[in-house]
Amino acid sequence: MSFKGSYAGVGTVSFRDMLLKEQILRAIGEAGFEHPSEVQQNAIPFAMVGQDMIIQAKSGMGKTAVFVIATLQQIEPDTDDPSIDTLVLCHTREMAYQVHREFERLGKYIPDVKTGVVYGGVNVAEQKKALTENMPHILVGTPGRVLHFAKDRVIKLNRLKRLVLDECDDMLQTRGMRIQIQEIFKMTPTEKQVMMCSATIGDSARSVCRQISRNAEEIFIDDKKLTLHGLQQHYVEMDEKEKIKKLNDLLDGLDFNQVMVFVKSKERAAALDKVLQQAFFPSISIHSGLKQEERLERYRKFKEYESRVLVSTNLCGRGVDMERVNIVINFDLPKHPDQYLHRVGRAGRFGTKGLAVSFVSGDEDKERLKAIQDRFEVKVTPLPSNIKASSYKN
Ligand code: AMP
Image (tube, rainbow, N blue to C red):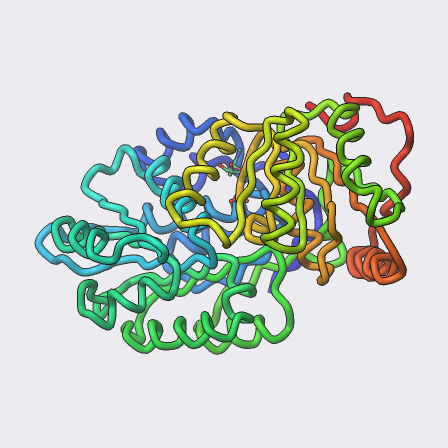
């Protein structure tokens, strides 16, 4: 097992040194990736030769590109055989959409390789038709919908060469999803590459990961060092009833590109979004109470900078990559310290500067803040009244 504790910086190994296909190098160049991040330097050389992988790496450090590049490097599409070569399972529909886009971006010069995406909440018949007419080699999807198509024999998994579990600890901890993944797993051949990754991998998820992979190369960052460089973390203590006013003041006073505001329930997300819109903030909300099309449309709007404040539940709390977000506000503190890390990791992606402000109201929140500081050995300090924009904005 390798412990990789230091921050990803400019390394000695380049993408070219990895002897990747010319088409991939070209797409990497166009995506603006100059140097591989630390996790990429450590993981790609193993993953691209078919090694099973368990990868725990900080949020925003390019884990997705590890399995995307490793897959594109190895895949040899059989144009006559309509079976899935690589299956990537994601814990939310938004993540499936995002991962699919990364495959399209980095695979754009390998036109023979077809990528598809399926997820719940949208019409099954339409997805089925699309799959049957144009079977992808790489399928990205959420477990429920993938299982549905596998059981219905719309997709064949009997010749699968690679299985990827993204944000695996979350999927394996959610009982329903774990069962679905196990069922999918049983339909795949024994001989295949398994790659699993997440920003946090707890002990129980880790042992499940070990059971479903063979001799995996494990790349772990020391948990204590999971905090993000370039990210300032502060808190403000207040009564529950003062939260909206405080949020207003912060949004007025801080210099943000984009902000994500996290709340504890879908009702609160919808209500707070409304309040912000009434105050003329360019706000939008995403939560599980919305229809799938609407969810993705809002996600796209925020990603494309059409709105600048996103109010969300934990749904967008992990993995989701919004490169312009420089401020995260925990309007409600999350229950679990790991969720805190995932949420604040939405700012300061790929080593950029960012600011996280958590609202602390009542004794329970104080306990939660303490648990977060203990878990990550991070000092979350009171928000100073004057904070220079240059310290949280690139
Ligand atoms: P991830 O941790 O996979 O969510 O990736 C975070 C962001 O970093 C995404 O926008 C990636 O496109 C971007 N990224 C991944 N690898 C690199 C790299 N080597 N250089 C610059 N950006 C990267």
